[in-house]
Length: 605
Image 1: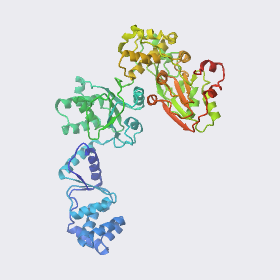
Image 2: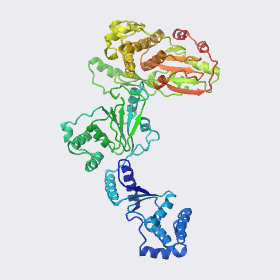
Image 3: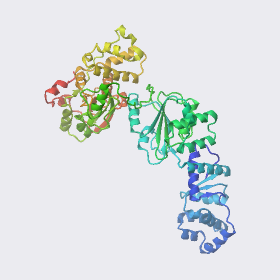
Image 4: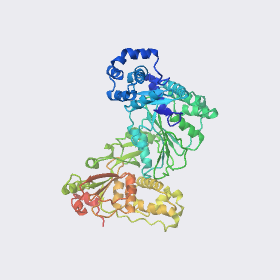
């Protein structure tokens, strides 16, 4: 018997749902299990006593024989107890056709004994006081009028809300949680941006909620939000001017909420102010995911109860949720013509675009060959958003040979290197640019490169001969990389930048000739020995991927030659097994064919 002494945030919604179900099933025992009256005793004597008592009742009602045997042991041939059991089963428990019950009053000893036996056979009894029963009756009535109830968090198979909401089961299954920080600073913005685009409808609030306007204060709440708000106010969970503010915010955010689908609300930042606390506490009552993205891992309000807090490893410096940007009207006739003639993402003039966002394709080895030579517009996820090319890239390490023989593995990797946009190596030859000695660079503003400053830095490198558009792309991606790392000084940032801008000349040539909507540049690293990648190589690979290059690391030995930092950047791990320790890098490069391959492939010294 489950005894409920009070309602609280931990058990309230679950009890309302259970009580409402028992109301519908007619299994609420207002008087507990009261002793049989004269009419019930007369029925017992006439119908079952002379036929064998409990055994006769079990036979007539097709009850579980094992359960009846245990009840017979309890009665110990006591006709009075046997009569009680039979009458309770037939009149009050309705022949045990249902399995969930609520008892409003305390049970006597014989009733408790019977309940203990029934519990062994999956029957559930919840005992509440008359006062709690009265409150549950009111709440269940309100919930029935509202027409829905939500299941918060309990439905998730794993404590990973951002993944689980994308495979949510049917029904009003919602999330109420706070995620502190991220496990991957490098991919945090990209992951949120991609997630945002997968959701049908999403509410994003960056930091503090703007106060309601006068017009919002005059509007009326509608739909299911109104019914939930009335209950919220009746329970006096919010009063006075705070209630007026909440009502106005409901008009702003929630008038389109329905019980037909679950919406998602991302609150980006920590929750500390009363207005935000009250707003989110109300939002969780609706068919809405309430996900607090405390990116900086700051102190935040604990909602307790069924609230879930997930602690990740790193704090992210990303100041705002990377939400979609609405396109604006044409600024000139030329721009208007561009939109008409080249607005289709599948049709563009040469080198029309100059900005990219790199996303990662989750692929198998079999996918690689088919995707390798394709224009990126043929890949899943490609698009043009507000003048930015969304580039689906291959970004993976492939370990082992899998089902391939040594010969077919070498042929497979060699074939990939024949692509004219491919650079192949076993070591990235990087000579970091030394910027510390130049006193004019001390004024690097906010550890970022502005236009003039970037021109000054690039003038030290072969990249200075690239087009202005490509230089701008490289600088923007370098700034994004700088933001993902916390540097204590300008000199540390400059050292890091000195690695990023030390792109090997052959790779710079591929970037130069690349039309951002066509086949993207590629880098294949073949690591056949025991040498681990140097930190500067891993930084360079992350940077090249951010620019939009395909990056593949082939490690036939299966050795762990990359660090967790590179893996956390989103590098996909494809482990084929069947490791081989005899393949040499020269065996891959000796298969190269054609003039273009010889021009673009470089074997590291």
